[in-house]
Length: 170
Image 1 (cartoon, one colour):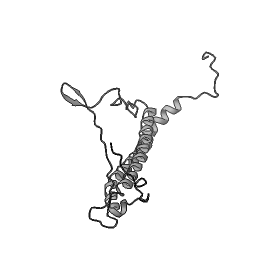
Image 2 (spheres, one colour):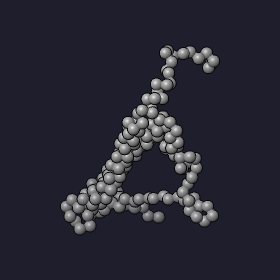
Image 3 (tube, rainbow, N blue to C red):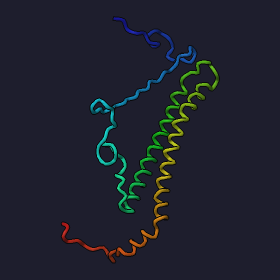
């Protein structure tokens, strides 16, 4: 059984000589895809009213203004979070790919290639941010277009003068 020699055990200096000899870093990417099949045909995972079992959005019932508001707010919050995550992923990808040496040895070539690849994720993050903005704008447009109907119902429903103590709930 032989043990590999390291720079420290072989007497060499402990500094990194990879830049001098052109060593490269090759990141590994893993993609996991899962499909559920029924009768031999691939179908997307289904369950619940949201479209999939891990639905992040409420069901699109839209039977009241509160349903419209809740749906738009949930969509906006979801897309803002996704926008941040994808933007961070784009920056990490750009940093990782920027360390891969350019095959032709051009100065700044590795950074340019990394930017060209990560630009697509940056655009996806921008699209998610735009989706969040449009979700908020959707509810604002709903309020503007249906202001008369909303106000008509608001005036009919009287609010209590003061908070009441409910002795039955104990």
